[in-house]
Image (tube, one colour):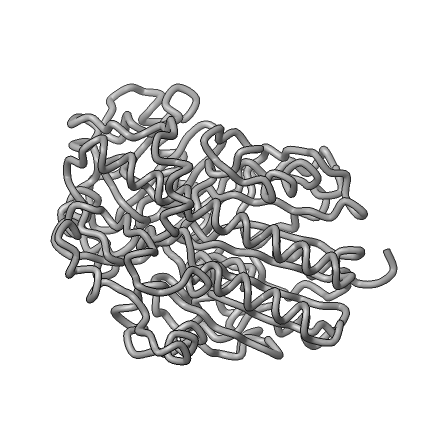
Length: 481
């Protein structure tokens, strides 16, 4: 197509890869995401580069790994990204919802930003008033959060599963409904501008897990694959992860007091609320796509759906993120553009989520900046069988007030092996994925010769990766300056 495409980039927060019906989750209710998967291209082994919001997003929007981009944990400053390149090339760039930049309202190249941040802001964002706060103020209401939820008599037992109905606010003010409605309002009310880059960031299904009760009913008795970690699996976790489990029972981050031994009923409720929130977002995605189609934007468009990381939901005895298990680092990733790429395909090769960045710039006719570590997945979108993905993917996370037992956690993963290194800690993780896809048998201390050889080989891969990143960092700094 001669004209640059409209680009619609939809990012959820903390959505696992196994949450879409058409991609193998029989308990999911996601008809609109199912449509994108059926008519588009689903990358089934796509991995983020950071194990929390800001590092992952900064990587996606910089084309570089977190250590090169300089964003290693939430609240690390990041103020520049490739949206600026799209704006300079003539795109009208709009953000509705969450990007998790810091400062929260940094321009980032957008002509318009309608920022909606975390549902339950408590640390660096405690006194930041976003569009959602303003909507509550205009309705004479107070934004819900843990201060109010702590008044619930069973708050500590809920594990963050709190019905929106308990907030005392109408459903249209739910954060995901509000963001979806705001995005539709923009599409329907603004004069049509092309080419358009529209980034829509849904705050959910990040906790608190707070869908309206009507959505939860459909999942109350669903046959979820609830986790049952054994004592041996927990004991084989490195010390920083064991300590984090305890920490999360003592501090109610995002309205969650975790449990070291949650009951089946607690887990069922947790999973029901989580998937109900995904279903709520799916409905908002469907409504947004309808508005875009009505406005003529989808005739020449690339729609991308993904998330910044997943959620353990009790897998491996953990809650939320800050681990390197696949339920965190592997995310849903769908590219829909039936007039441009053949749809109904599954790409199973390993990809970094940031590999989207050069592909979007190439589609927009914009030169890809020097110094990027992203590898364009555009050939894969076009069906080039020779471009089958990466040999290794990487993910990293600096220590923070939650992951306090290590200065840096680093993952390297191939199609068959995964290693996680903890800086300053003798313990680590090593998994043989074909025989242990659930990552329950940690082989880090195994004396088996094959296991020891793989551990050495993967540690060498991490070393080379970081050294190459060190060479790229000065060039990337010049681009950002």
